[in-house]
Amino acid sequence: MAYADYQYYKNTYLGTAIQETDFPRLALRASSFLDYYTQGRAAKNPDMEALKMACCALAEQFQTVDAAHKMAQKALSSSQGGAELQSQSVGSWSKTYRSAGDSAKQATEAAQLAQGTLFVVAQKYLAHTGLLYRGRGCACGYVPPCCDGL
Image (cartoon, rainbow, N blue to C red; front, side, top):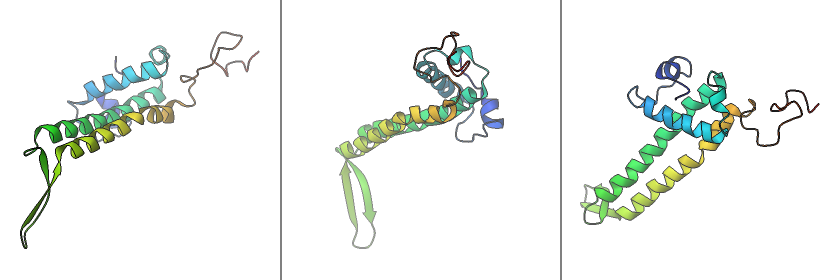
C-alpha cells in the first residue's frame, strides 16, 4: 500500500518531477522503504501527514536512483567499440572518446549516492513523529515522549 497517491503528490506536496504513470511504482517503493525504516510503525499511521510527505519525497528520490541506473546501463550497452563519444570539434576536426566503463562507473556512483540519501530524505519529514524511535518503550508501553517516562 502506498502512503500517498498522485493527487496528493500533485496538489498537496506540489510535486512536478514525477509523471502520473510512474507515480504508483515509485510511491510503492517509497512506502516499502518507509515500512522498513520505521520498523513497521508507518503502517499503523497511514494517514499521518508527515508520512505522506515523506512518501512523495522518497518517490522523487527513487526516480533519481532509477535514472542513474538507466544511465549506467546505457553507457555499458550503447558504447562504440568499448568507448563512448565524449566531445567533437569542427575546426581542425577532432573526436574524443572515453571508455564506456568510466561512464558506467560514474552513473553507478551517482545511483549509489542517490540511494544513500534515502534515509536523510525520510528523516527530514519523520524526525519529530516518533516513527523513527529505536530505543525501548516507556513505562506506559507507548513510544516516548507520551508520558515522559512515568
